[in-house]
Length: 129
Image (cartoon, rainbow, N blue to C red; front, side, top):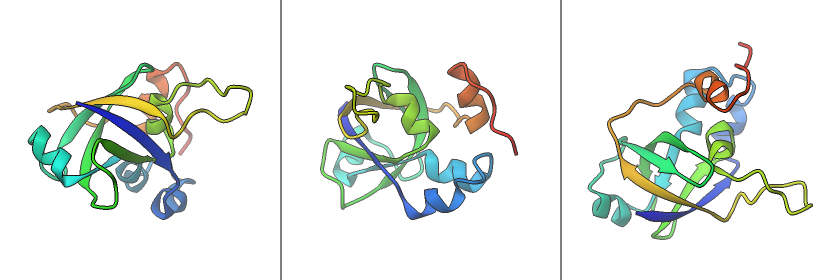
């Protein structure tokens, strides 16, 4: 099912940003918020894993219901997981299109990857602890 990915800062993400290898940061950065009706259509429960795929790549995230988001939209806090999905093109603005990435979401039994694993997957280096 196709969705519009919206990204932004969250208080929890900001409070963990200095500890990107921590379980708390991973928990926040891998959280995907979705309207409960969309969750029902996809037949997924809160905390289920889903594969989020864009033209840039795909990553596994954990779903949480959110009535504050519109149907057919999802929200992910800014960070390595969102960055993995958003195209790097900035249109000379210096900022990628963090509000207009189309993604496909499918249920999966695959596990979440750590920030370090994600960085290596995209050719980067692991964050220091």
